[in-house]
Amino acid sequence: MRILFANGCPVWANSLPWGFRQLNHPVEILPLIEQKSLSQTMRNFKPDIVLTVGWISEYTPAKIALLKKTARQYGCLQAYWATEDINHLRKWSIPLVKKLQPDVVFTINAACISAYRELGIPAFHLDFGYNPDVSAGPAAEPVACFSHEIALIANCYPSLEAPHKFRTRCLEILLYPLLEKNYDVALYGKDWEKSVLFQKYTPSQVAYQGAIPFADTFQVYKTAKIILNLQNQNAFPTQVTSRTFEITGSGGFQLTARTPALEKLFVHSQHLVMSASAEETLALVDYYLQNEKERKEIALHGQKLVLAKHTYRQRAETFLTCLKKIRKK
Image (cartoon, helix red, strand yellow):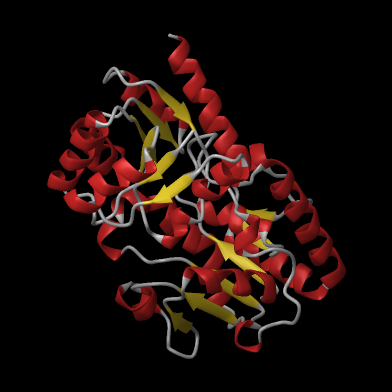
């Protein structure tokens, strides 16, 4: 099958497209949705599937309408991967799906499947994954500027506080107790300077590094001793963040908040470590900073699990299997 991937963002362009190519399915990345380039791509590439992903500024109503019209004109199956569920199911995913009217929807949270099926659209669960080619194997040598004891890579969303209540709770569990005890924590990401974090703590307590390119995140994962990872939900058995797979897949030692979804995918102290409280975080950090051998063994076991079960090759296989199901109906 030939897949036109309608999202040029580096995070997504390095996700499912890699998996499809591993399965020998040609993929064309469409970074911009414009009439001339879209029609030319349709004629030259002749895709079987047009896959739209998440929500980006490129997805204006006019461009979504153009994508829908052109895909139908050329007889392409349209698929949408809802990577912003469940937090933005009603704000972004459902309105976009109503405009796009895809033939099938994939969602990172299985609890959202019914919302799409109520619209008459087949829907399936499809989790995030890991692309080993983005960062294959351990770093040959530690990158000095990323040699932190503890690091957190995450964007801040000060205007979206309500939908991210558990994300805020993750900060209370994972980050704030470490800052209060003056641990060496490097914080990467956008807009943290606009958050309450910078009102609560002094500059000497917050080693803010600013935004970081996607490709560099893997150097941090492989070089810092402990990587903190925020989660967005703890009320569902199927939703984890994309960094969950990226950190562990690249060989990083991950400390994240305990959730039902994580406990289904990983074993605590075998593939990564999970914390449910500030006190537990401090105890885990103290222990694993002092026990390098155990830390590295856990990171290695976690990496092996992700490479065996959670790469985008496996996700692409799931995607194509689900398409076979709707075609049999």
